[in-house]
Image 1 (cartoon, rainbow over the protein chains, first blue to last red):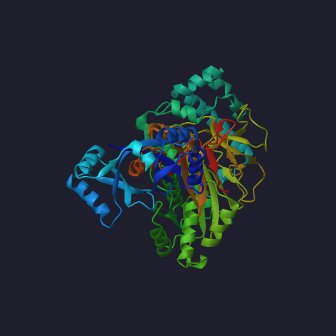
Image 2 (tube, each protein chain N blue to C red):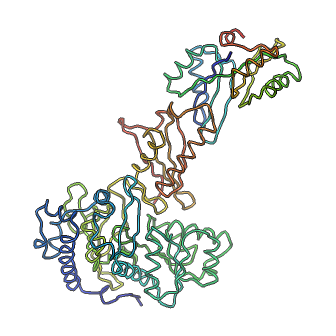
Image 3 (tube, rainbow over the protein chains, first blue to last red):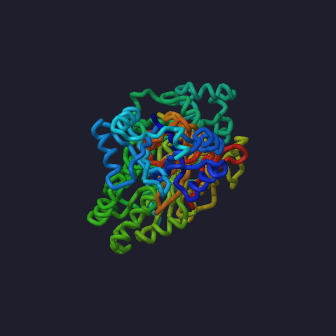
Length: 144
Length: 433
């Protein structure tokens, strides 16, 4: 059970992020999570959106190079130590974590959501389910 | 008092010079006709035989040679003597990655070193001087040429090669070096370093410098002269014709005297290939009239230049060429190294990128910088930063191996490289030379 993350190539220059988000805004795409990996010359923007198909199509039409990557999105209680329990599941099942970032949740909610890029997303999702965590699928993303 | 290495020939009358040129040219044409089938074929195609060349007035009848010929004939096709008579090669980059390999007999090296000795003498050097050769040694002709010239003149020669600035300055001070030879950008860098160390012109024993292998401005000359307290002289040459010393500056510094007893120079229209009248600006063409192993006939240098035949106050009678004013092809000279955009394109394609690129050349703190902008492609893009960075580093290594130069690679967005009328602008040269 995985979710498609869109990775986008951007130059590391003023205004580039703005221009990209404008394309998404104009097309009514809602970003649910975002992280940015930057180097001196370029950056990779990683986003989770409500509609992957429309987002990748409009980005491609606007000239952005993008790729889909499978990530695992997990619900957890929004309390101290919440993340630690998930990381223990990964450690125990020997899943290697490449990067992670948080997903926007409603302020009133007592739940938090994390996005994980791991070396084996199938094993990661299965291990989390076995440990009783709710792993979010693509359809659920739009409703969160 | 003007200082010469071979005064008799350097100050010979035009009559004498023409006589020498006529004799050497006739002999050289016979030599290539008999020993270089590649050039003989070119002559036959033009319907020219050695009998048609009776004097330098007939030179225009001969076919040209270009970098393309050097590539097509690589490596031995233009060799004029058996390999066993060759004693050395030097090499420079070619248009598409094949390097130009030039061969030398001992005689060829002797005449080349004579040319370099003339340049050193014109800069005031004698056997009393200590001459530090800070050009690179190796396949590059700079180090070997000036080193040989310095020996011929009897200078105490310091073959230090380029790099290691602190050691360079230590040797200049400890061994009382009075003459230095290197690229102008390295001279400027040395000068800056001396200044940073708190050295002023009077702490530096140098009195003259010979700087060539790349373009430099009058402003740069003045700044080097001021920092080091020297007089800075220009020198011209190319590997195809032996190396530095084809032409050199004298005390008057109003152009470089061409060593006309070894090289006949012409100015042509690069498009029509017609020889242009005296005083015209055009492409510089050289015929080496006594180099035997690699006899270049009417070699098109692609340098845009002009001549002056005015009498020079130094007493030399060789005509003078101006500093080259540009190129009639797309070759760039970066840190003294010849770079063709096509070479960069070759490396990009080899590494899986498309040929959408732009070369940005600049000069920062007197050193040339080379930045290659490459458009990212869907095939080369991954979500993994390390992987992209690794491919970027592989590309830097590939360029280094092709060009012999460290380039910076910048990955840019697709279609971001400026295209005017559908054609991409490949080279942006921001150097103020």
